[in-house]
Amino acid sequence: MLRRNPLRLLVPVLVALGAAPTLLTAQEADANAKIKEAMSAAIPAISENATIMDWDQTVLREGSNGWTCFPTPPNLQGSAPMCLDKPWTHWAHAWMTKGEFEAETVGIAYMLSGDEGASNIDPYAEGPTDDNDWVEAGPHLMVIVPNVADLEGMTTDHENGGPWVMWQGTPYAHIMVPVR
Image (cartoon, rainbow, N blue to C red; front, side, top):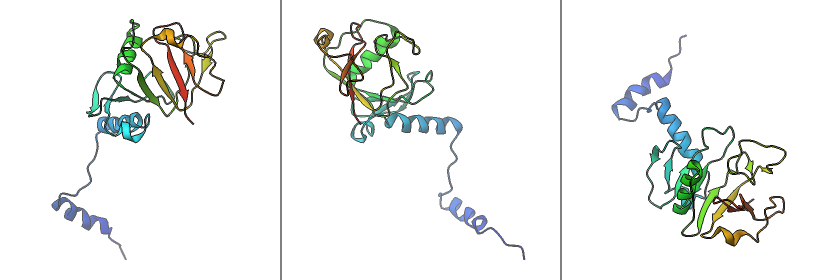
């Protein structure tokens, strides 16, 4: 006896009710994946209402709380999404353009998914070398301060179990705060 697929009978009913499944385009699916990944960078209280932006400055989702979250940069293989407050978005622009930067206020950034690694001393190192103190940070917050000279007394030792200063002596110096 030939059995009929019961779902074949249900599809016309779903279509008539306007409940047919929606097929996402590859572009929509990619945008949704980037949004989900970007949101993983911060606590939900921040990421749920943050603007989600791709690295080419395409807004994937408008937000309302002043935070901007990004998926992993396209040049990285691992996972490194981040959520930035307004001072950090200015910092990120300066760093990406190799421009000058001085924070006007304290800024906070979240990278709760961690990152794939960076030099602790060279903001533009592209990989580990014998002399660039490469560090793969787990989940962390980052803090910038209006006067980077205030960071001079803090440790740069990322193996100390607590906060440390990354990129000391550059305009991009910031405090790394591990959160496990």
